Image (cartoon, rainbow, N blue to C red; front, side, top):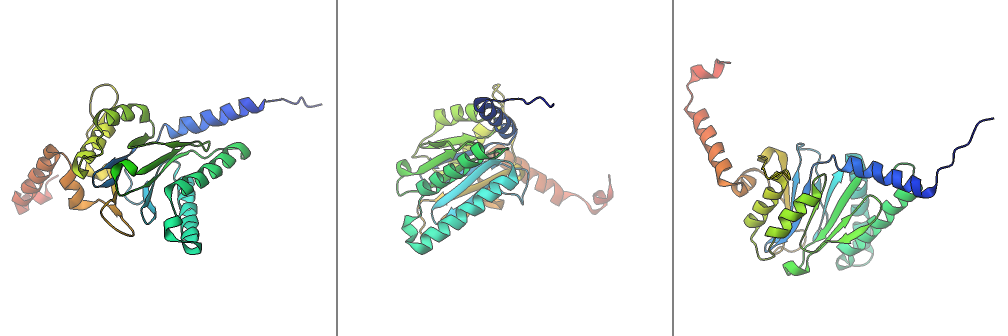
Length: 254
């Protein structure tokens, strides 16, 4: 006769939480913060095709860390829900708060009812007329919803990133200063030293405050290079100068 093993519900929940938390902590970080020009999203992302930052609706953005197929399922579900609500009622009825609450219910149900929880952490953000009125919600794998006024961080080093953001965040800061703060947080390794992050490992987007309708805009190419620190811009320009100054015979050398 086979022996049956009993595991308490509390232990099952603890194991699921530990499993999800451990895997999310391996993910690269994302920073979201309010500034004078809008809500800025900055993610460390080595892929140019698999995005972490998206538009959900007119003035609402989405950011995530964790397992890509799971966050993509959540994103598409959010877009469908926003479109349905906007079509059935009014576009003004689609808010970050309502979407965040729906996400919380979905993640909570998955965490408690399915064997494996989603290994994701997401942010739903809405830009307002004034920076102080922006809505930033962070949702964890178990459906917990946290209102994060002004700034938030997700991923493996989130606690340390929040310390950097808290010390330097200002609602009145222009986009360039907000990006510099986000980059400083993402570059910090928690031991007092800084890593170098280049444009090819960054995904950047903004919900523009002054715009109307759909205000989500990705910042790429020369626009992103213009935001990078001066020393990197100088390095890139010097590299371009060296390439333009090379002789035809140099191209074939290994």
